Image: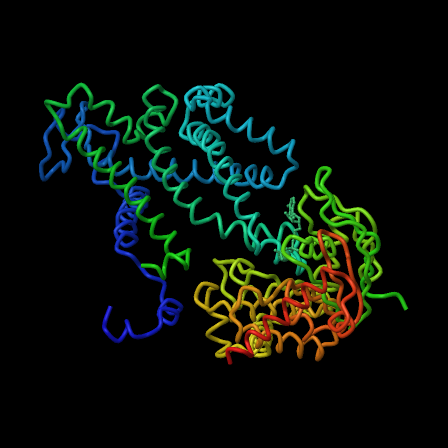
Length: 288
Length: 269
Ligand SMILES: Nc1ncnc2c1ncn2[C@@H]1O[C@H](COP(=O)(O)OP(=O)(O)OP(=O)(O)O)[C@@H](O)[C@H]1O
Ligand SMILES: [Mg+2]
């Protein structure tokens, strides 16, 4: 910031440009790389993910950037495909969790005392319900384990957490004077939700969505391990990590590569969410 | 002619505690009345009862006829039609009455858009924006464009209250309720806001229900007052009569307090 900028009233500068924090930029870059790789795998991968193109458990080289796996397949190709799966799992689970969770949470916030108590109790039970058990139920109810059954199970499990958070946040917003003020000028309840409640709970919700995105990506790998996630050859990072367990001393790259991929994506998403919240919340933008 | 607002035997209870009891007053179109009383006497609750927005825990009894419509016990949807068109409110706290995450221009555009829709108009966005600026200009806000583009925390308390007034005026209601609109402001700003309210209400021919605990403030803008104490009306009449010959002891103390305050001011000046 130059000296001239400092002399301008905060109002003017803030109104002109929302701040791009470094956090946001780093998040955008990290997530951007994963999205670019995920899109790329739709058209091109360095090797065919299913064919043997080298020896077993080769160390990284110029030919195989991340070495090869136990069956002699290119490991870097698998990490790249893992990006696609992770993004689909995270986005899919968050979309389902947000759609169901926000709806139920808002209903509870507006409901009569009795219905609200009933919903709150149900949500608490659902949150205590193990995701794993839920995933098994979903798999049993659908045709069998697939990426989609895992996403559905994770999304439903997430919706209970989102619903509880939405309920609390919305209730707090509804107590504000500006809600009453807005109502006295004739804003209907749906209008209050769209104009005031959603924008005011969004900063907190979005950060939670990012957190849940990361949790879903990690949880999917546990499900895969138990055969409740995406079946091979579309292995997720979590499955790669678990496959590397036995060979972590002889071929550490098997754990390091998917680990780095997972961590960069999860951190990237969280930084991005932090940045988005700062941009979406004008009071934060100024106070920096 | 039926009055615009007629409150008859209004009683507000929470549990077995009575907050307002047997309150009656009426207000014709274009009339201005003050509702005064100390803190906690039930002024704000009365205002909320008129708009049908009492907290769920408070139960109203009696009758409130607003613009020919019974408010007590009426369905939410019917009441929502009254809000904005028959009545609008300016609140005590200018900071908390505005949504902190919404630009001022967008906030004013909300009630304005609803009024235009009510009048059967659906002007393009740019037209609405232009009218928003007109309203901001009307309440004597400097640089309306800048204000419209600002968030509530970026403007002063007095400016926020002007925005709140602009929003209420954008509704063009038949009755404007001002609930202690100047209490949170310093004395100079207070006087300016009062003058503004006074002239705008006159100009637009709205009725005004002005709520305050401050007798001299009320006296400058209204013709009649009702004095409220512990939820009961203790005195009612033209401002001058109540001011010059208060009949009730409570009103006498109010008047005396105001006089001695004035005298003290003159003494030091
Ligand atoms: N939601 C509520 N539940 C129960 N009692 C309430 C509620 N809101 C207000 N009261 C009580 O009702 C009484 C009247 O409150 P009200 O807000 O109308 O006072 P007021 O005359 O506007 O005071 P002030 O000048 O301080 O604004 C107070 O004693 C208050 O404690
Ligand atoms: Mg009050």
